[in-house]
Image (cartoon, rainbow, N blue to C red; front, side, top):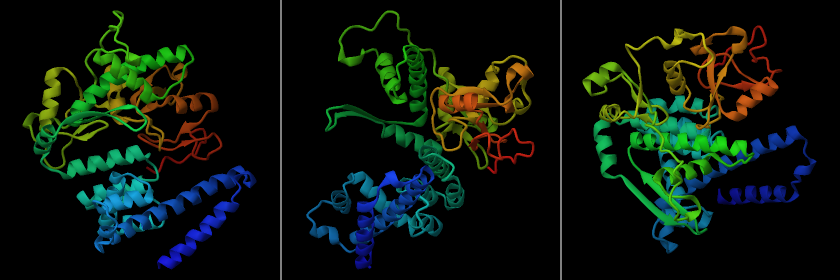
Length: 407
């Protein structure tokens, strides 16, 4: 079998030597990207499974490395953590035939396979749902969904919260490029509150940069926001913070929780207690956030009927705004995982309707909002995450018989 793999590798090398992308048309280049990705995914699956087999046979003990993951990482040019995760995933796939088949057929990347295998091992009933969602979600969104599945499978949310609190940590180091790094591990509600504060400051910095026609990544603005909020100054200067800088108000964090669970203090089967964008949390975490004033709570039962809310002004009400942020923790476009600086969008132009319907609102990232405004791209009919199509697509809402999104 290894000889056959050698022949395949030689054939691919020969093809790569003669491959000239300049000879491809645009559509051919796009297809080449997809085919190359499929080959890469298949190869990743074979590589991980072979590494797991090498570990079983003890081959790594003859390499002088401290662990199988160290051997795998050294030979493949990956990190030890990535190597260990790939081998662990390969073992989990033996109990997940459908995910294994999708991986060996090249339908899943190594990262997608890892996320699905991890969640499906915790809750086997989630496997098909995650496999169906994988082509539609960004990798971040798929990982978030997998994390929600794993958290939900851990029934004792209070014990989990206490364990994570005991293990909380913050460390810093200088990497090989000379850059400083921070790694913070804590309960999701604490991370969410801090990120809510930082995102508010980062959004203001983005607006300032846009006025000055400067463009940087969302992460860059968050990094500057962290320095500003903590009280230091950028570029390592020791000067005090400007007196014109104001600390932001309490962060807005959205929780979906069933009222009965909140009153009881424990989530029972079929009930929800979820931090939007982060997944299930303990009821005690919600109680603490409510007590600190650092939360806007969207109650799942015995709440107002958000679906039927109609407002006669352009800007949504506070209740509608919160519900919209709960429904769209990321851009509404299928496959777009942008979180920050999402913009409200009226599906039907408010200047014509003069009404703001909750179900007529979406949250879009600036790029997709601009594409809708300037090129008339539209989300297909429906709600939640869905496809974003060009005007000539038969699913475009302008077509009288446009089908709703399958999701």
